[in-house]
Length: 414
Image 1 (cartoon, rainbow, N blue to C red):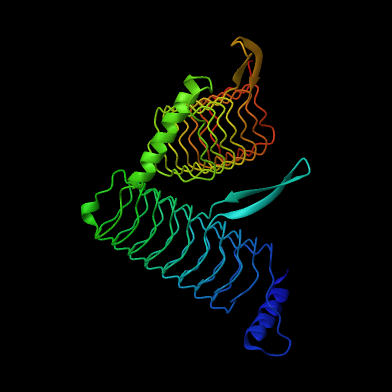
Image 2: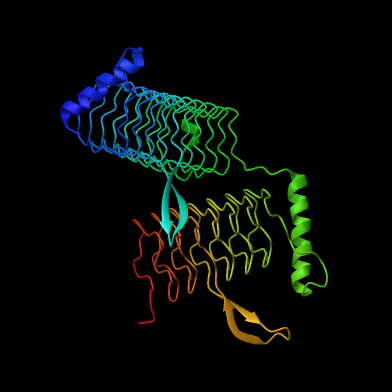
């Protein structure tokens, strides 16, 4: 699209907004418009999904309710722009200038990217990225930034009242004088953030990471910090786990196999617990502590393990197909094949591999993890740390390794 065609399309969109004859909604899906000048324009409800506006100038423009899914706005100047209710899922806003921009009720959740593997349709999530973005004085009231990256972003004096930032990464961000009253910051990462004079009154900070944070510098009236699970639920889970361990030790003669498929165990402390063979399909274990746990041959397919502590855990032969392990900590975890024994206890010479097909390991920590012979078809390791990981014999040909660190990884026996 040349400059003249663009101007004609914008003019037709203005007529559409005003209800005039010849009006037509602006549709620039997938257009390449890097660096374009679009200041002070009325672009409400425009269709801009997948557009490249990197380095573009959109100061004071109206983009309310626009569809901008997966748009590239890296380094764009959106100062004082209005994006109220805009669909910004999966957007790249790295280093963008959003000073005093209006993002009220904007949708910045992870965006879905569709791709095909062997003729099979797959979907993966890409988090919205605002790393290094300038959001000074921005209005984020009730915006949804679930899982968004805001590493080293500048949110000084931003209005973040009732914002949704569950699992958001605000590491090193400047939050001085920002207002997070009533915000949802569960499992968010605020390590090393500057919070001088910030307000977290009535905010939900359960399971949030707060390393090197001095909360005395902020207002935290009635904020929630402890990940509280009802005592009755904890007790019930403890009884079920005890029965499961009896089932293991008796070879299935006594006790009962643990089946919590579809259940919620978020934030529970299950460190060093033997859950081998447990049925946990579709279970929510977000933020749970499973360090050193035994989960051999466990059914964890389609489970939610975001921000889970799994350092040193044994997941040999586990089924993790379709599991969400975003930002999970799996350093030293074992995901190798599980040897299959004969009924008399002798080794059969066969083994059951761990299954991570279609799983999301985005930004996961897998340093020195053992993934030998694992099934990794379409496993998403975007941004994951795979230093020293053992991938010998693993089927990772179609795995997504974008921006992953594979230093010192073992890929073959050679």
